[in-house]
Length: 456
Image (cartoon, rainbow, N blue to C red; front, side):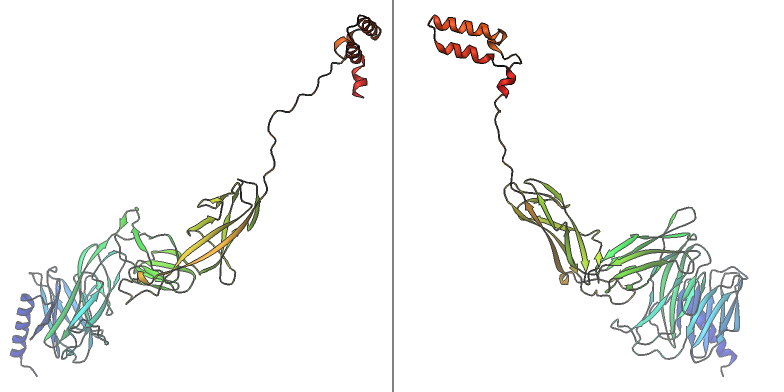
């Protein structure tokens, strides 16, 4: 058992180290680490805690495994200190601000010899922005000297200057502002600390996901972003968490699925009921393309609007919205919308539509907290083509030039028909008698036939 003198000396030494050091790397001797205004250190059987920059007279309760074992009262200089006997096995340590119930220290301590392969502690996220009505889940990971993740859990003590931690690293803010939060690992003679900065904004009222929808190919990675807004419509910088009804999504909002189907991607503001959702369609490969109409007859130079319909394996019709279809014709002309113009001289033609789509390899995902990528050099392309037949009719013969005018026959016969026939005959005989010639008789006599008789 330690004497009272030894205990006082130990406390004095720990206090001196606490005031003088901010430890973020391995140290020998007594281990001290910092989370802004909270300092913790340990050795086997004891835990030492100091708070700084607090309100004079403010009190804190210290608990081990849920039971109160001590307290801290802040002095006039804004600091307070205590040392408490602690179990030698792993235990849960909590330091609670009595005025509002915030757990400014909460987590696990196991003050034993440091594992040989443990080199440093990682805490994620490294930085974040959350609303006052939100919260933030932290994670800790141990690494060896070659930066490899350790396959066992490192006991982590979570500390903050304001707000409240749960033992598993979930932090809830108590006000707006900028805060320092740390994850710490305490071993005998060593302390490891990894700290982050958090900005807390006004409460969030709504969350908008961008883009509002998505259409993907299997294994294609699609990133989503979230924007939060307060009750007045002012945009708030936020860090959100992501969920998906299927497929895979990481902490950066990157989504992909190897299987076709419709999926719901949801952005969530932690510790609130504020969410935003979008629908993502992962397309099944198109194996058949039909051109509509498949057969058509046109005159030379005639036009026809063609469309195309895609089908997946099994004959299910699928939308081609957003797809780029390439049109072509053997002899005629077709534009990028499928409007076709027939040639003037050919009598058969073929119109085709071709869809080209990429085939993505499985992405290189790593962990859920890392950015995902795919190897662009391994992306291949598939084509599917549909056809339509065009029959062009023979051109009709066109007659040019003026048609002869129809003979106009006066109603009264014309010429000398205005005279009675007996006068005509008399005149003709007279002319004949004068020897002028018989041709004149015929010329003057014939027009005396009535027009009606001539037509008959």
